[in-house]
Length: 223
Image 1 (spheres, rainbow, N blue to C red):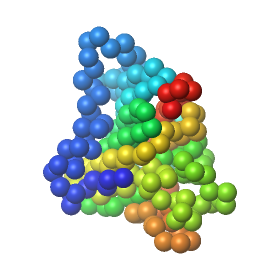
Image 2: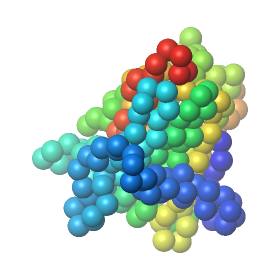
Image 3: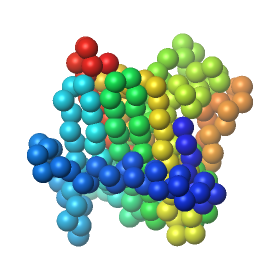
């Protein structure tokens, strides 16, 4: 897992940005569906290609409070640290036994370190609705704070530090694939993720949540 912020360097920043923007350059021959548009933006809100063996997609959102008339896919529970109107893009590329997840954000509090993780359920009106962290090897004891399970190799951690304009990005590479339908959202937390016994995987309050259509299906021989 790679955390990207002001101190991570130009190359790391470019790598993370590429992970969430390169998919916009779709080859003309590719049969890729688009879903919706971002108001005032000609770019698609979501692009996806999934043949059952490999997958790539990106999806964009703008945060809004859960009391909105139509519940948004990107929900903020703390408008001080994740203001309404802040933007998020998440991408996934998965093939063989590897998964690459990228994220970038804009419009958050400048120069603040956030925790972020993939969770098991979609976002809801309450912060806890998104469920626990997705784990490749499930901890039999929940909530999981054992470093043997709650770690950046067994979960997807996307901690980041915003720059002076409130933008940030992160990239995580795993040597496994999501179980179809079990990874449903990305949650942004209050501070960097802890790693010690009894607190591993914790990162403070859940500030915001983005429902993401991670891997939904996979052919048996395409694991």
